[in-house]
Image (tube, rainbow, N blue to C red):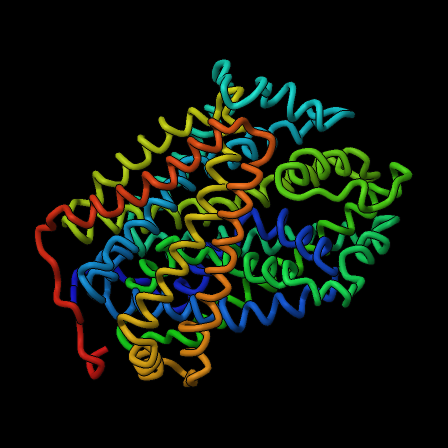
Length: 500
């Protein structure tokens, strides 16, 4: 076992950091919409089935692998079997794509915090966001110059990421208590404010009214599994490297349940903040709730700002705390994307983290400038689609195959039970070897078929082709990184089960 490896200062700091990594912007702007669109309150049935049969089992896989192998994703998979190291590198290549554009979205939030003080988006939030703030070009083929306010926001975000990480895990153990607890406090404030607004109950009705007929639609179940998989930040290498910093005899099973349930509970609770405001906005505009219901960027930068401007009491205050909420949700996810990437190189080649980290931050910032151009929004959307829809799904599927069939599911289960506060049964083996890989495999195949038949969005075929080339490129690069010789490869098992 590597005695020089950094350690979390406490179990609670590990749990809070893992929750922070899982909880991100999608908890606020994606889950409520997915829930509403797929049967309302009835969606919670497939959602929690997916949590128990895929989310928690995969969380146990990643926590168990990182804790057992005491390494980041590439080296951890190399210790399972040398030829599977590329799976770990693929996870890091996917997360690299994500951390190249994710800070740009946070940069938008930085700028919008300043706009919120005087409600700078005015009476038409959509026109402001698209035409004045992003100044969108005609399409992905026209970058059309850099938007300097976004570049400044991007520099602030990358500086914050570096400052959170450069002193190591002990400093991060303290930081996460603020960056995770602050958004929970703000969410409570937003929910209380939202529930006191006229029309709020109508919004919640649309959010929660169950449509049980939706449960017979297979796509609703696939949507539930997809939401669980992506919301827990699995297949990014994050949970593997975080658990590799655990101390001896650290629990795995109970921690996995705590992190998973806290994340999903936050998603559900965030829906009250979102749909109470949407109900108020619908009433104020004299339209139905579905007409103002949006997901993603439309919710955060168009619909919510529109509603905030109409608030009868200190709207600027709620505008500021809403975008601070998004920033604090995003910063945990952002630095949890950088940490596994840096650890992948420091673990294999024993590079000094003190110079790997700033290089990653500087290069990430420079490449991210592409997404700050007037055409950058389109490329952000394209890269996000391919990284999440194909990259993460493929990594998750490969994780199940490697642990379930090569390492053997029963072997990992026995190790987890040795160090955990309660035992997991053979149901876990079934989930990892059968249920989860089948669901992820079906999702992956359906996504490929849809892409071949329809392309992606309204983008020209050549833009979709570039996305495909990026996806293939990171797979090739993963094999290249695996083939490069390391200075030293540790033994396949860092410690016996007795000393774990």
